[in-house]
Amino acid sequence: MNVEQQPSAIDKVGSAAGESAASPAAEALGLPESFAATAEPDVTRKSVWREYAEAIVVAMLLAFAIRVFVVQAFKIPSGSMIPTLLIGDHILVSKLSYGFQWPSDCRFHLSFPPVTCYASQTVLPFSSPKRGDVIVFRYPEDEEKDFIKRIVGLPGDTVEIKNKTVYINGQAFDDTAFTQRVDPGLIDGLINPRDNFGPVTVPDDAYFVMGDNRDQSLDSRFWGYVRDTKIKGKAFRIYWSWNGQGNWTQWVRWGRLGKAIE
Image 1: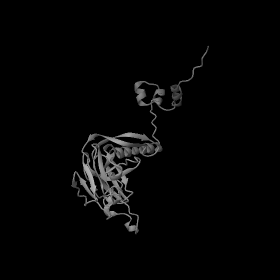
Image 2: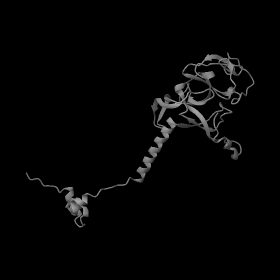
Image 3: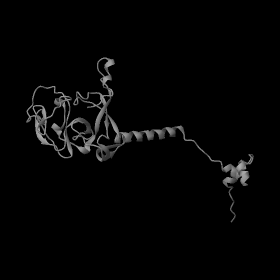
């Protein structure tokens, strides 16, 4: 049986390049002109769209990594931390204040960020949360929400509130520098724990937190403790503050920009 031989790719390229002169390198090596023609590399540039797409993907991955491991931005939507934080303040929260945190209990979804983690483990501790720190954490009664409060009771502390005064281990806690109490009335602890509460002992792996706006804050007096694995980080700076009321020249609170959170 006869088989018709198909011309090779080199034969085709060689015939097409027959009119051009062989390269000096091919002549020096004694190679045929067809080889010189096929030896030229075919370099194709990436399309502009592909370059932009790769840049966007890399930027998103970097932003996600910074958000998870280094720093995250939050907006204050309520007045529970007045006078320290006002409605419309935009703050930065350090994820590295207490150590390097590794996310856990994560769930994936089709949005940005693509992953939501409901806990974290400190794999490289730097320090422990301190009394007076303003922290962001996952709200115990709805972990889809983030809350911000100030640490009042540390693990092992006994916390009690008598007629609006906070006592830590039997000693009155001086919080006048950063709190406000706008309601002069007192509520019996049997009716509401706002003004009279406890005493309770904070568990070893938890913290007792309160809002600086003492009379208008939903905090540990009402829903309990914040577990250490639920702390997202420590608030440290106001980077933007938007009032949006009154004259347009007052919409931005310029004096609060860059202010440290203490």
